Length: 120
Image (tube, rainbow, N blue to C red; front, side, top):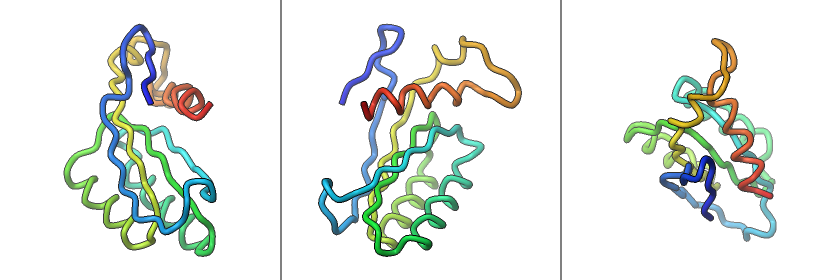
């Protein structure tokens, strides 16, 4: 799915780690909008949700601007271990960085708008 903001594509790449054994119609989607500082915490959160809901059909969507090969290995292993789907959307956030932000509310806050639009 293509989304444009500021007349530019913002989702540069999509990585789909799909080891789910359920149909798309049955799944409940959970989305995260994070920068690289919260990737580890995002993985912990996903594992926690999966451990607490073993019978639920879940799919996780991670919108981020950084995802290196180590992160790819970890998230793929997590998806395999729990037979779930984790989709990572790499965001080009150069234009987002020009929007107002603070130390506590970084440009990653704007990922929420992209998430809402993506799933609408």
